Length: 376
Image (cartoon, rainbow, N blue to C red; front, top):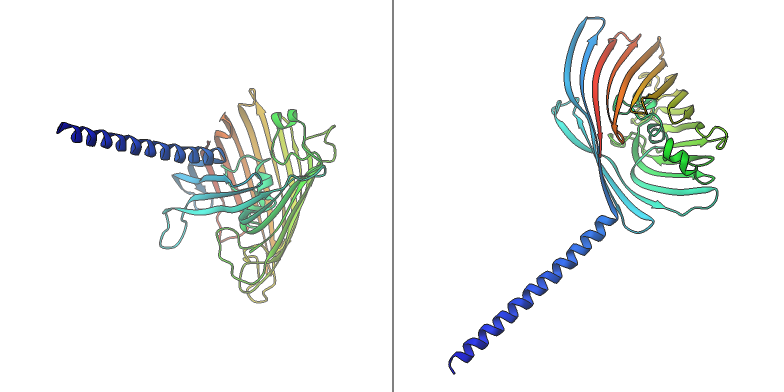
């Protein structure tokens, strides 16, 4: 009889333990379901640019070489509702100056809220982005010329516009979407049947600079696809910016540029021309009169895909002239290379980049490179 209380206690203890285990199991299931639900509405991707570069400076006949992390992006996106989402993209790069010169550092490239509207028959998939966002043109060009791994694109490289900035971007495709065959064989990006547009207001100094004046810049892009049935890959783009250079002196910045692009399954060709007063950072300016320097130029790019699109031959030619007070500065860039497409966006390429200028303070330089882009 004395054993009954002990047996009862053991029974009750076992029951309580099982109940506790069941509660813990139920809690874990709830947490797991929440995590699964969150992951169903999120995405994680990365893009890494690695390279080996050999530099040859023509005037001094000196050279050096290096292995380098050219760039690294890690993007996390989360859908909050069917229309509202957020994105954050750290940018891994090498510090080029100051006390931290040579350090591998991480900064933010994108950090924004995105609102997608269902749109209508003409304005297709309109979107509003707020925060640290992409600007109207460079993001568009990078979807046509897919060789950012070699270096920045033309207007970005000559410091006319930045690829990202703090502000708001509004974009939309026009007239519905191109058919599925075109999107599958050529491009899914900016595939509006009659084109697309983007416009926005920004601090003006780019994503890597603090705001140094009270001015905000207005930037835009309008792209038209005039013959979506006959010549679907042909597009005409007008882009530009109005505002002040990002310095306390507030030099004028006015940019107007046009680009013609043609995309086909095996061929991509672009040509662009621009004219501007000043630049977004405020460097193209006379330090005495505070007047912005007029500058202009053009660029051409071509890619031909062969061997079942596994191999590409590509080339680019840039010019840039700055009309300074005492003299003009002319610069030219020649790029040529071959790429092997591994899978998706991932590729390995060999290229040669030669830059020459009439600016005596900047030596002409040729760069031979083996580069690798990994996208996953």
